[in-house]
Length: 313
Image 1: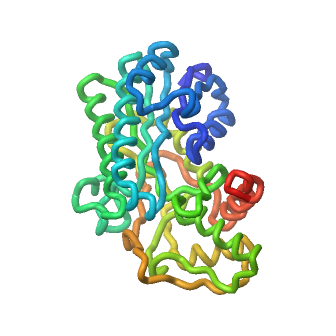
Image 2: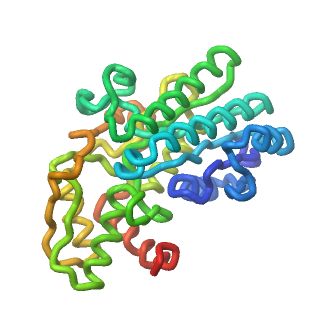
């Protein structure tokens, strides 16, 4: 990419989009185009087409999506599939039709089958049933991958896809019910510390295994792929190791300095038993994550403390 390329970052206020804007700035890309949801509703086809026709960005990074944890995904499946399909369809098509030179579509590791062999290779996509608690979101993201592949095959459009593992870090969503596991636990342990609660309960048995990646590492991977990758197959982006939910809860409690006990709630779902991605493809290209869990969790908690006003404190 030329350093002066006009780059549209869709979803620039979110966890991933804001990190990508920071990474682009560090890499010398300063000609960024952004819009808030109030300024541009990406579900509105006419508005998106008009926006692209007017600005004609050279590069598009599609980080905008409706996202959430197990509770949000299982409670609002219609919204998750409808809104994500609308966003993807409108942005990818309009980018192609207005001479965009490169597009990066961001998905999620939940695209893979629930009982997938571990670690999960890119080739395992569509080899088995999805996890039922978030299949609506996963199907939308799979459709996004396939749309990028179809536009590359039929039109020669340089659309690539990256599938990040579970992300966390500055700019995360700490909503009490609709957030992902790390921000949800950061908030819960913080509140327990402030109120003096003697215990905190976490969903499920605590035995499920998850892989976590600091969001600024993911953002660096996005810039790396935009500069060096052009192919139809999606690319896994993770750290190459996983941890149990109970152990990540213990690390978060330590980062927050909460000294009470941690209880599990087996009546709540664990979700997919294990989800570790095989990242040898991107590792072999030369990218590796740099921020470890302990350091990343400290940064995430500091970000939460600095932005408590956004979450009702």
